[in-house]
Every structure is written in C-alpha cells, then in structure tokens.
Image (cartoon, rainbow, N blue to C red; front, side):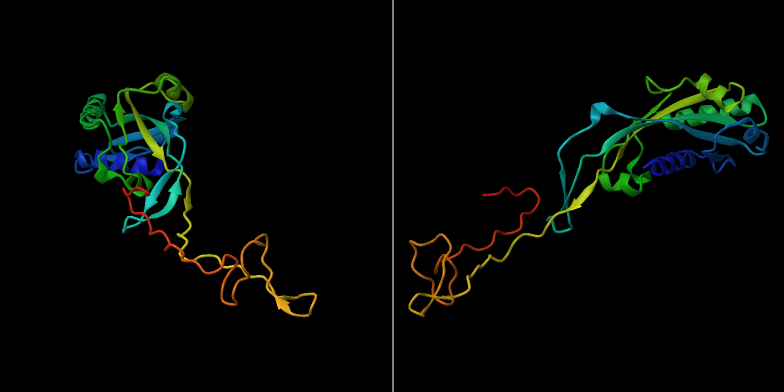
Length: 235
C-alpha cells in the first residue's frame, strides 16, 4: 500500500507540470550527503512517519463478488494508516525553491483526496477514498525540526503532507454452494435366522429401506438453493 501511495503522489505532482519544467520528483531521505549530490531542481517527498488510525478500525468481514455478482471470498475490513511526508524543494537559489514549494502547495491543496485515476493496485481494487491533507501532520508525528535534525541537515522550508490510506484486509476464498445431497447407507448383516436384513441407525420406528433407498426411505427432496447474487435477500 505504501508504494502505491508514493506512486499516486508522484503522478499527482508530475501532472502539475513539474516534470515538464525539468523538475525531478524523488522519495529519498534529504540528508546532507544527498543534498550535496543534487545538480538539478528537485522536489523531495520524504516519508518519515507511519501510524495506524485506530478510530477507523472495523470488525467483521465483507463479501467479495465476481463479475456475475456471486460471492467468491470474504475479506476482513481494511485497516487505515496515516502516512506523513516531508516535502521540500531543492534548487540553486532560495527564490527558486520557494517558487517550487508554491507550485507544490497549489497542487496538493487543490484536492481533499488522491484522484481515483492515479490509484493503482490494492488502492484501486478497494475503491475507497484516500484523503490527502497538505500542510498538516499527525498529532503524534515528529515535528519537522526534529526530522531535519535527525537527517543531519539544516532546517529548510517544507510542507507536511498527511495521507490516510487503507491497507487491504485478509481475504479467504468462500466455498462453493452445496448442490448435491448426502446419502448414507449401512452394510447388510445376517439375522438370527440367517436372513439378510438392512440396518437402520436410530430409526427403528421406520420401515426398512428398499435397496435403492437411504435411511429416510423414499421422499422428495427440495432442490438445492440457488446461488445468491449481490443485493438478493435469503427467503
């Protein structure tokens, strides 16, 4: 899921015109050594904090349907995580870096969630909104100053970006519906007079079955229940 959020953010920034302007979008840690090797304008999107949103943890299991609307699996609810990024701009002059940050800020604040057409993998399969909050960080996330200090670099202007993304639950394949009844027969045995007799377990008050019958004798069995489609109720 994390790499899918990374790719969606990258594509969102590329669509804003950064790539056309010769600006590179990377997800490296902006350490001092990394900064010394930069030779082109760069926007760095550094992921530094991952925390689960316990308030959104669900229970139970949902149903997964095939193309015909039949239940083929059951999946536990997704678990939501907050991904916090530190977005910084790197160029030759502070004025150019501020201009890049301004362009990034306009791009990220234009939407409240990541566009659906940018989502891939499990994020696209779940079909859930992925909220995007620019200029904010989680309540327990480290401050930007602490992050820059841990990276060993000087404090730079940066944008805190928080993404709430679902992690797909565990799926279990559903067994196919039962379409055939269960027939049980007992082996014949010899009675006291040497005659063969059929043995019926616990059903002494029922007449002995015919050779082609089961323990319950001849009776009409209802047809097997039809497979349930999405939205149909059981009778």
